[in-house]
Image (cartoon, rainbow over the protein chains, first blue to last red):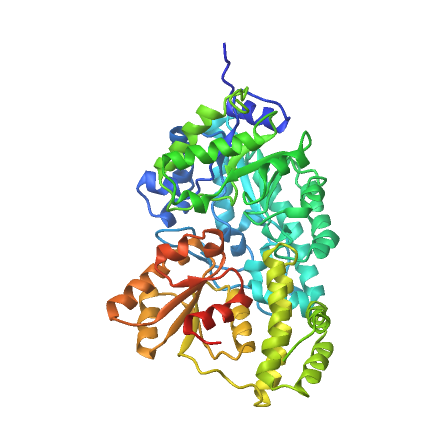
Amino acid sequence: MITLLKPAERLGAALSHQEGDRVPFFLAVTLHPARALGLSIQDYLGDPEAVVEGQLRLRHSLGHDAVTSFLYASAEVEAFGGETLFRTDGPPNTGAPPLTQASAIERLRVPDPTQVPALARSLTVARGLKARLGDDVPILGGLVGPLSLPVVQLGFERYLDWLMDAPELIRQLWRINEAFCIAWGNAQLAAGVSAVAIAEPLVSSTLLPRELIRKEGLPALRRVREGIHGAVALSSASAPMGHLLPELSELGFVGLAPSCDESLAEAKAILQGRVALMGGLNGLAMSHWGPQDAEAAVKQAIQAAGAGGGFVLAEHHGEIPWCVSEEVLVAVSEAVRRWGAYPLDWIGV
Amino acid sequence: MNVSSHTLNRAEAALLDLDLEALRGLVGEALTTSPELEVFETLVTPALERIGRSWEDGDLALAQVYMASRLVERLVEEHLVAGQLAHRSQPLMAMAVLEDHHVLGKRLVLASLRLGGWAVEDWGVASDPALLAERAHAAGLGILLISTLMDRSARRVAEVVRTLQALGASTRVVVGGAPFRLNPDLCREVGAEATVAEASAVPALLASLVGAP
């Protein structure tokens, strides 16, 4: 008789590189619950109780193996004086970069995340989810990594200009960001999240030079990972990890989520038995999918990376686009149940 | 003008090393036998294109493409100030970022176009697709280039195209940015005419659109 595991047990098995009852999966539905609750995106994200309710409702309809207390990336820029622009039909975006003068960096101190209203709301969500779910369903927190935050703090153009003309300023900002990321990650753990996912697209050598990442980026990420007192996963938010994947796998993250444009099978082989592989689904592509496409994509990802545990099926960017229908998400969920049950005897038949 | 692969390698290395003096030296040497636009087209543009292709192949970082472009921008500026760089015969063109404050892609494209002798107005950030289309129509643009960062903004290009059609405008819309690179069907879906994956390929795309050599 097959014993169904609780989501926390299922994820725990995957992270321990064992086959549980099926491949665990998580769909980062940060916006869709607003639709389910009949609220605008702004009203939904501004109301921690609604977010708790929405996460639980989507967890019920999709049956995925985690919920998230993460609200939106721009909340972290608010900690540095930035603003968030809300849309009615898409994720909140950052407004004009808040740090535009060198003197602003020189004066900058590490913000206390608990004193930033948007981040405090996220902590309230974490506490609310923990109260409702206990230890059975993992709660994922999230933060933007120290190398990527300057894209929204300064604007990408100014970031690269200063990297070229005033690298010491950038190093100073990275150090502040490291301390902020550690404080923000630990605040989320204290509020009840089970693990923190760092979104760090700038760890991709398609964005920053590989040698710079090796020399300064990887040590910074290691310090952040070591400073956060709990499980930490790293996502490159759909940017390729490429040749840096083996080095990233040495930093102590429990899971890595590279781009799904990279070979899942090759990534699995590199991480095998040491670090869990997360991802396999492309959110942008999902907007074109019908149920059959969803099933094919799920099947393909599980075939590439599911055997032996160590794999969590997820969307690789970290947020399911608003335009993806719930019908597609339900099809993903059904396909995981159909094709993800261990043992994966259908592979190779 | 025939440029040897050795010279091209040196130009590429100068760009990657951010060595403006070396680049000036190579351009100066070529200018002794060829006119400015030809030197830019046969030496500097191909070197920048190589760097763009290396980024597309995953061998270089966007930061390196940007920094190389900035160096070229400086060089182009020197020649424009000196009044040496001629412009092409071309339709009226402008470029805008739709709904985002992050204008890196626009700057890369504009640098690449100026280098190729294309004159493109910089319309900054546009927050309203319909207003952007109306402005393009009123200005009589032949080509409107739109850069986007977010999937939502990319999808709003469809509103620009629809408004242009409703106005009976003949403006052609060229799009770029991560959403179009990651989702190859999106360009067609929003009704844009063309897209390319990286900035240094935009001059060649425009040349093919307007039938220029």
